[in-house]
Image 1: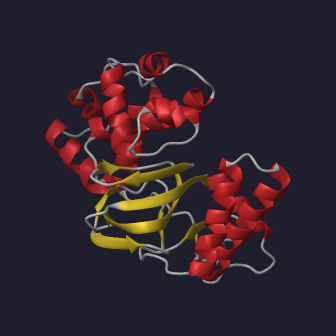
Image 2 (image 1 turned 90 degrees about the vertical axis):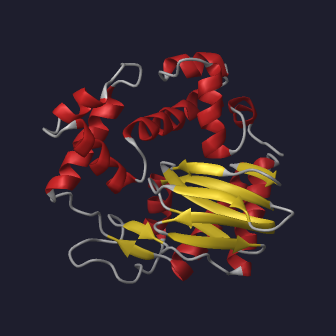
Image 3 (image 1 turned 135 degrees about the vertical axis):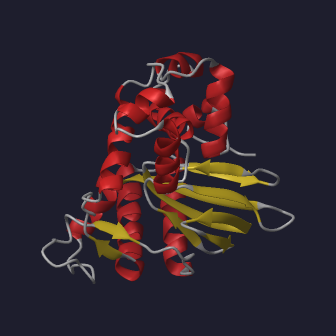
Length: 267
């Protein structure tokens, strides 16, 4: 979770491996997402799906204040399975429990659902009774799923280019401390370095090196939560030094690794 206020901060293109639920409490945020420009204003919820590249910047002179959940895919799917009624538009042959919830690309304006999420965020951040806090969170996510989500069956990766991109992702993520050249990456999919880089960027929205650094940031989160120092985490994930790690971390989360590890942040 993050609680933050940004008055003059711009997020570079990045992605998360979780569902991002951003509840805008004050001001407004403009962000690029899935080929479009969107504005989330006060009282709305911006949802970014796992693995989707997006940006973020102020829409008003004030900027924006928000409370954000980064919800693991397994958690959201687990809440989905517990719902009494299956989600609409489940792909034929796929059960609701196997499909990935899809909230579309629009900003969600649902004050009731938004403030339920905010209430859960406050309880969890404040160290409330975990039975109460988790119950409120599950209720809030259930409300969002029932009112605003569709079930989306996992997409088959049969297209040749898609298979090549997945192969490159596997190669990039195998050992994050290993120096890896673009030539070696391209050889893994039998393409020239130029075509491999262009294919990867077209499918993911990021160049191979940027995607790999984002993955390093994502994989650093558990160690930071566990109390490891930012320097130790940076080296363990393959960054050259702490400043390099901090620069990429701030691009993705808007705060330093130290503040993230502390469990809350503000600007």
